[in-house]
Length: 611
Image (cartoon, rainbow, N blue to C red; front, side):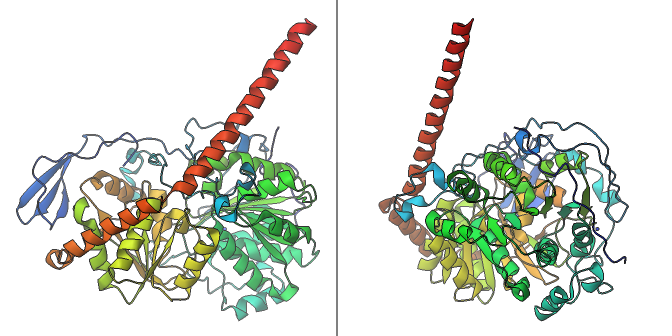
């Protein structure tokens, strides 16, 4: 089936007032005993030296950095049928020229076995206990493949010489010379923005809202915290007030928490027209969601898997009249793991006048591939910046031996106990272990990962947002889109596997022009990886000075707390729920494969009989 992400029949333009460790790489091997607790990184040509109080430890590194293409390309099905022909131009302020070319399929695709099992509720028995309906989110990293680095290191060899200083051009800062009224928004929306403290639009809002109002499809890329949600919510509400019906708009997100946050912003901005919105995500009873959808809400905010399940099981749900389809965090949604569900939704949202809006904080190859195709009536805007992170973010690193990293973490939390802190970990198991360990050490904290039920996840997020606790230990489920203004410190307890993940993690602080700090713990195995991230974001991280002796004072307490946490999790069979869900998915996949094989065999037999 040919499915068009962008409508081949462009929406009729409307007049607006005149006024856009890499995979396969091996950890560096040590050539001397690793005994010191105080270290600093000194890169040499093909090696790195860890300077310690007891001498230098050389970490051998490849003479040429090992690179791999990022495995985040869009599936062929997700872009098959994209209209080719229309050309759009982009000036130096951010607009690009588009040339006609055939859609091509990227050879590299992400292995997303655990992506969006979260929302595929129809793939498990629906009458099972609600706790067993917990599916793995896009963020379930326990068994994820080590993601390949997103681009070749060589791409950035000479970038530093060409960079321009844009400290005074922060896209998150309001454009004081422009107003929301000047963008063509209705007066009631302008007043609602003012009531929420939004007096001037940001750069991404100035350069995308006018195109959405004019009926164009839009791809918008801007740094984290720059107001991308309002950039699509405001024009949608503007058009909805002309002809309120439902479903009028469908907004897709990769994570449940982001879906709830977007719904809150729609609810606040749409207060003047009694907006009806519905959140459709996994981990919630499908029958209750069906009752809400039967009332035809104006805006549906959903994760792809669960919405696809409703389309497959609910004959009364129709998206045929939806005027807007929004992919928030589009780079993530266009990955292979979301492809089947996304294609089902695209087929259902068949309105020829539909506008498609893609927004993301990072451009990966899936977005780049869309850029390379001339699509009908599309405007692309990317905020101009020489670095991938905001200038108000203080980015630091701490070199630490892997075996005592937990001591450094507890010490750093104690040094900043008066701040709101998010600690990112690499997997659900690590997240739960660290949460229990930190609690045992006397810190008030909550966890957020995909092994938790949806009610527990929302409860943890509510406690953190309301400052009942000031430490959130999370997997990458919390790395995209969440806007918590009080966050002052982000700690990468495990170095993210790609620069894209790093950008999204540290983007949870220093939002909307505020200041913040991000600290990354770097072990002897992460040297090359952190250097790659620095080259991609075009920022050199500064060393954070820590008192090693003070950090290691509680070594015995930290070790005991972690051992106890691991024993408790083993007794509770932590991870059993995920294992059951994976088994059910495998069972359904095998059944589908067997059915397809039987159909093929039957077809061949019929053909031979006919011959």
